[in-house]
Image 1 (cartoon, helix red, strand yellow):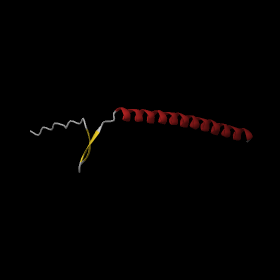
Image 2 (image 1 turned 180 degrees about the vertical axis):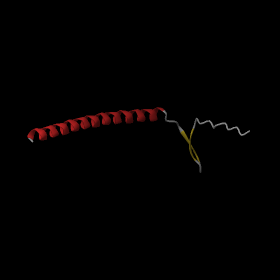
Image 3 (image 1 turned 30 degrees about the vertical axis):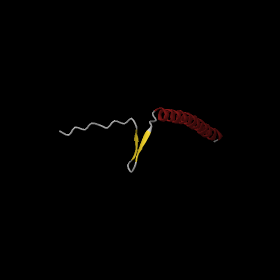
Image 4 (image 1 turned 90 degrees about the horizontal axis):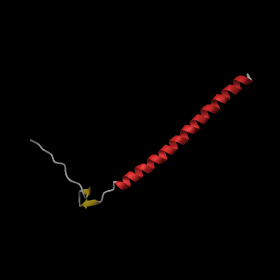
Length: 69
């Protein structure tokens, strides 16, 4: 009975170690992803112009050409 109990405890420890390792990997990935996202947002930041009563628009925005023939 002790052998069976030790085997179960060993399996649980192994699974726990695997899960902890996966959590660490995901946390590292999350940190790197959020850093990349912040860098992309900063590099793509556009100056905005405020149009009274309407809202904010990118200063360098060119409207789409719509063709309704």
